[in-house]
Image (spheres, rainbow, N blue to C red):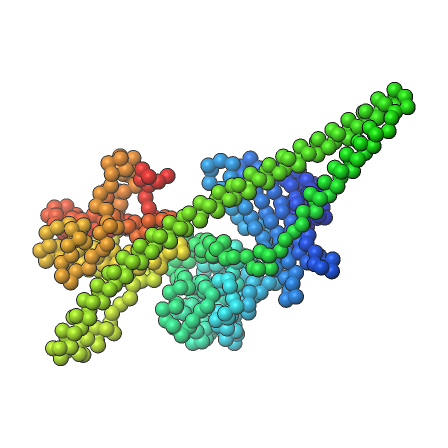
Amino acid sequence: MSGAWLRKKFPRATVQLGTGQHTLDRSSLLLSQAAYDDDGAEYATRIQLREDKTEATWRTTVTAVRSSTGGTVSVDLECFPNSAQTLRTGKPRLIRDLVAKLEPRDGMARLSVNALRVPHDRVHFLVDVLRDPQRQTPTVVAARPTQADPLWSERVAGTMRQLAGDASMYLLWDLATVDAFREEIGHDHRVGPGCVRTFLPLVDPAWAPDAARHRFMGPSRLTDPADQAWRGIARRIYALALERPLPPQLSAVAFPDRFAEQQRQERRETMDKARLLTSVPAQRKGEHDEELRVEVTLLNGLLEQADKELSELGRTVELAERTNTSMQGQLQAVIVERDNEIEDHLTTLDALQRARAEADRLRLLLLRQGRSEEVAEAAESLPGVPSSFEELWERLAELEHLTVTADRRITFGLDEHAMSRTWAAKCWTALVSLDSYVAAAKAGFNGGFYQFCTTTPPGAKAYPFRQVAMTETGQTMAQYGHERQFPALDGGRVGMQAHLKLATRGIAPRVYFLDDVKGTQGWSAGRLVVGYIGPHLTNTRTN
């Protein structure tokens, strides 16, 4: 498979897969390696294609290891940009070819190039696949819509092709299958007609909150030509694939550098020839001159070979250093994000403890008044936090004092990220706090939102004041104020500076709002308007 891929990629080159380095063209080098067991049998092979192009250096590594239980194959694509230009990488076609040829499995799940059809009598097998504790990759389940839709079919089929090798994919074929799947897995984990759900490993159908882990996209978004959220399905699974560690068979294999040993042997032989020429006295001057020319030729060959080896070694070291720098940067980002998350969790735990203490006191007061039925009814009707921004949007009507003009497409884009569940929960907390502030202001609270969070009236819901910013710097507004113009109810746009922080790393989502609760004139009088829920906007400290 690798040979066919290379021959198609380099039709004018003679592709050799034997151990060693092979030049395919002026900018492409192929390294082929093999590993052998104690009996001398080859059990692992690796080919690495390096392409030094103007915009970047691309390195594709294919590693295959044979074991007693079958075999494991990995394809790794690395990009080393040569400029600040952002490059988009695509999955090598080789991966789809390998999946189609090898038909790999992930536990009970079969990886395929296209989604596997599931009839109603095979639903039980699909549920077993989802619950299989050995499954390590996501499983994408789509259900055909009740009425054929070309755009839905095009988008879902395209997504499935992109996921080959990174996820197992199944298609609930008809309405009977959809009903049977819902009956088998339960209402919370269902996949309705026209929907797509990405099931992560370790599905627990018996636990309703588990359903929130498995991303869900409805038919209205998949069939809306202006909505590009469907692309996030593949992006999310790609991100998960990058986070997944290599199987032990691949990470443990070591390839001896036989090519380097071969080069060393060739150098030793050439030097031995040169020494032999100088050790035997020449009989005549002409013979001496000829021996010198031969010796010079041999030594020049050695120098040329050494120069090539040094150049290649320098290029390898350079790429290794760039890889190490990138890994160090990622490690530092993870450390900072971990520390910030710990601080966020501590803040959340503190707020939770206060809320529980308050609820316990109120519950005790009600019980002392003999109102046990009201206590039980309140406990049953308490809503949870949204598990996604799409769910949050559906619940905005619960916030009767807020007006939201934010672009929902930007907001829904946050659902593509790994931290989206946490962000959605914090965003809901922020919106509830803003709603509580408006209610308090209409009841006589005199301060602004920041004062509301620092000196919260009894029974009101505050947001952590350290995550509240009521203005932007003058320099930020001078350079990037245009980014902070958001939709107004009168059809125009209005500047907003006050914002709430949902995170401090990565895209660091923000909620921008306009507080005109005490205003008396204009379209915003008496309102608090949320104009933006999305990624961090540009300021003087970002690029």
